[in-house]
Image (cartoon, rainbow, N blue to C red; front, side, top):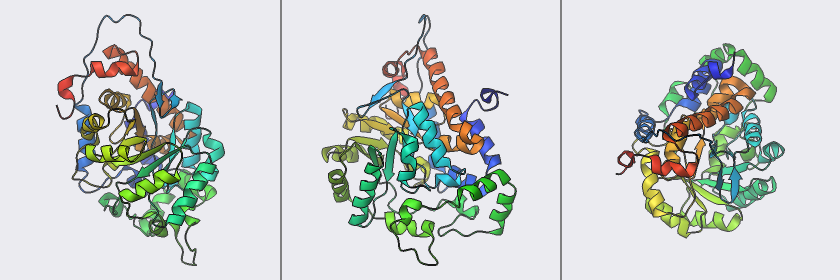
Length: 384
């Protein structure tokens, strides 16, 4: 049967992934922190944004292309970084980067991926962005950035909204802890999901290979347990200035929710702001990510803005673009897709999202992305 019949929405891919991968793997991707109220707020706040429908618009031809940070893209969305992607499906980073390269959209490699940047370089082509946590040691920072640049990643994203570890209670209930321990429940779950298990054995047990290159590998070494010592630098404003000096290409800072922070970063020479609350995985007591977007757009009206958190379809992408975002990133959705369908998943997701966008643009009579702002109902914009 056609994939469009079996999996017409992200929710269908999520359900399929939940059945195809071990329970602890799905909980790693799907969970947030606390009571997961912020995750629900991310969704409800997006759903509150509404558009006026249009009639008698005649023939409609749609243009979803955009330009961001000097580069042209056929679609206004890409794959957000997710740490330990390789646990979701064997070879996930390679599958996702290849799909993004084929679609001509950005793939943002996580600092805590299960592959090295040099491994993805020949696969990702010209679509590579790199997401970085702040290493504590300055020599690590410089060498990591050198390797990332030499591998061909042209855009750097510094994540700053993880000052401490979050609790992520659902992960704990699934026996996922740092350092990791293999439990009887995990073994049983792996036995019940032979495709994931056999593929993982062929691909190799996931580990944080980029971080491995910067720690002392003793006999009891575990890269997941030690990764925090490599990337946990407790970043401050001075560190942003240092990274700006070290990195010649486009530079964004991810995890921004306050307009005053966005304005200060732009004054420091940051090229773009990434509005995000880590999809509810860090702090359960903050605002929905979309609620932060209008004020940040007002604070930095000329600065490129990326948005994420809570996006589950093409209509959500349109909502974010209509009220201030220039580009939208999805993390969980792309990983549901690869968990659900392997190599077929990410291309299918790109189709689902773009088709959903044009279907909804047609209903509101918007031919181009630049038409969206005029179609949104002003009273539905957060903060109005």
